[in-house]
Image 1 (cartoon, rainbow, N blue to C red):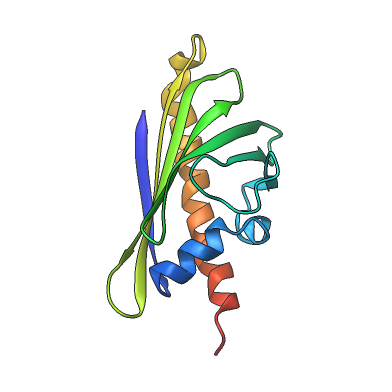
Image 2 (image 1 turned 45 degrees about the vertical axis):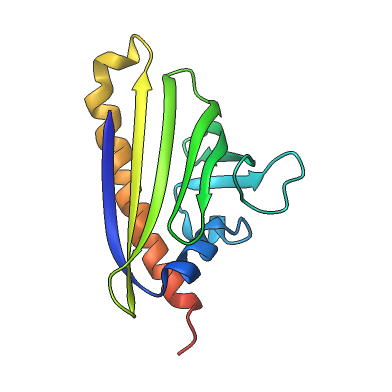
Length: 148
């Protein structure tokens, strides 16, 4: 299963990309999570780095960056996570619309293990709703960081 959600945010791709990839900011804007940090001594997000994130529902996932192309795209794949996911991957893209706006797109792809595959459409709807809210929260919180 795969889905994408996007939002327009006032700011440059560079500034929004940097804000989202700085784990000191992660819990400020990502209201889906209650825990997020880089692993194995990684000082910053980059290709090959691993991260641990725990959703507010208590489910945790270890991911590894498979792409880190500032300021255009970053992508991760699940290396350890909830049993229900056979695999899970996500990419975030940042595309300049004009000098003042950036289109931020979150794309998620996953496969579920049996018997969760029977309710895959429900899990997708829940995840998609959460992603939509995360993007709205990113827009709000990023806007609060921009000096007037």
